[in-house]
Length: 289
Length: 130
Image (cartoon, rainbow over the protein chains, first blue to last red):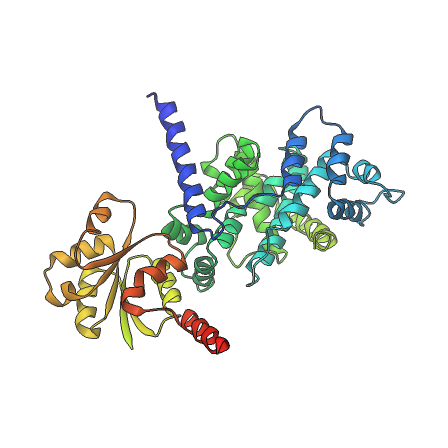
């Protein structure tokens, strides 16, 4: 077996280990899944020749989703000159790619339910990081902003997977983190044998994200480990810091200062970006409830 | 009241086990090494040991009679050495990390019985039937 095929095999085993661990812990015996509409939207977003009719048809299959897309298109964050009255108007107002992002976000929101409030905090964090990643991509011009939103949204999906499968242990780990008992990834590693970034990358790959986006999710706490997804990993790390700075953290100290420096974001730029993210977050946080 | 000794180097494992044990009528003490575990057995006379497999192997090798008389639930990994230890007569069950609450309850049931929440539910159900 060549070195590269051995690496591929080892990676496949690691991914299977993550899936098996989460499935064994889960009461449902399943991994968290995106609703079908979100999977279809992700597939459409990847399709170079997708047209808006397909997206309109997809949205029209779900009345609740259609109402939500209209509401978002008519929100202060996205409204154009005339209000959107139909799904087609909404898709035109938002654009194909953004409509897909919004649709996926609306569906992803549904996974953030738990009795203890951890999921609500994680949802706000996910949305803030998604907005911040897109803003930083725009500001640094290192990456297409439309490529940045979903990795930002999904960067901590591993934590949601842990929460859904193993609430008690995650509650214990959160308590240890807040008491200064260690860094979250290290504590997760002790219990699961892998951390939430690794679990998140596996889920994101299963959900159809691009390999570069998945690598960025896997390395968002340590962008130096990334290769193809390094720029995106830096953006995620920096976005995590900005989200924490605007009050959308998750009880841990963000470690993205080095990423901000490497991206060439000055302290003034960071302040300006944080203000824009805060304003966008305030506009969008209630759109997905 | 029963006493449980938890022995694992990982603070997360100890904390998760303690959280699960809160639902049982028992008190618990913790240790991190084989030497500490043997000392704790003599100090607290536990009814049950929940011990990480490699620590158990080291503690068992010491030949301490009190330690060897106490029932053990192994906290294991996939490591072959920990798999072999499951055949040890002192070991009444093994828990592969990470484990869920139901698996934990099953593993300790022989010594600790049912957790409080289950006992209460059964009692209420019985009363309602009458």
